[in-house]
Image: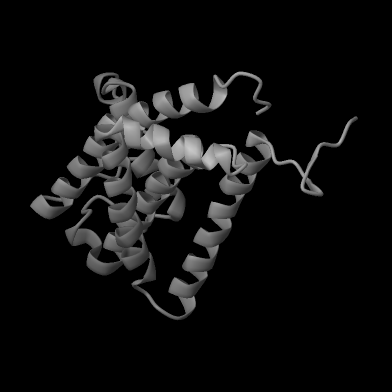
Length: 194
């Protein structure tokens, strides 16, 4: 097997960078949960809210201006990066920021925010957000066929429903757009070894 190097270091591939990203995020989440359990109860709420706002703005900006996305991908590839941040990173981090945010809302407001939630676990909050994500990506098929990963539903709060609407809105306008533009830009470059 031939080892490729760039400037004396092993060459990075899209797969190796994506795996590092996918495995690194759960480690960061575990650290946040440990901090929340031992030091500061509101950390997932505030970190989730901050990251959700940041990634929502960035993803919506890229969806509304694909030329900016293409320019940033070209810049990333020119620096020797492989583009994993655009295809995997942003959507992945946006998803997990929403999981942290709804979990944080539950920790701060409890049954007032989610009346049907009965001692939900982190898995339950992941399933809750996954239900919303798949509802958008699969054109409401989970609602149509009554197939859901969890029974948690939001309470009557208009703010919480607005947050869930915003999440679905960003996923609907940004997720597919970013994936298509990124994939086309990263994987269709001639002579590029990804």
